Image (cartoon, rainbow, N blue to C red; front, side, top):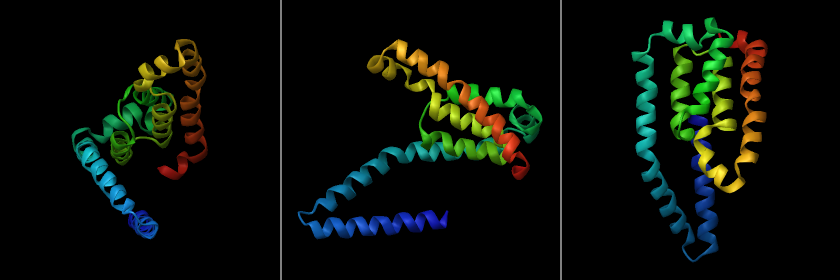
Length: 165
């Protein structure tokens, strides 16, 4: 995590410098906007990291292994896809939880199936999609994209499973 932090700090300083050189104090507005976003997102990050940590101590590794770990096979992939479809929230909520599950023994195939299902097919955005694009288009999207998380999970287990044991 140190390298990404250094990169983001460097990028921040570069953007502040560019904003300062442009004049008119616009970089101050950008810093305020970033700070306000941080205040808005920080509680969600806080609780999602707590959930990720609690998963590691509350849910036994044997349960993870049985249901969505290496031992679960295709059943684990299908359960992970279902969870990915249904879990609400964006990456700030989902990624810490996924990291906690990986730490507890979630198979790499199930992790990829969950991740792909969440960000390719997640149902939490259905109301806005239907309102803007119409139910016919969204029905086609669901039918077409629903196969990819399953395939991603199976392919990940086959191609990379041995590297994550």
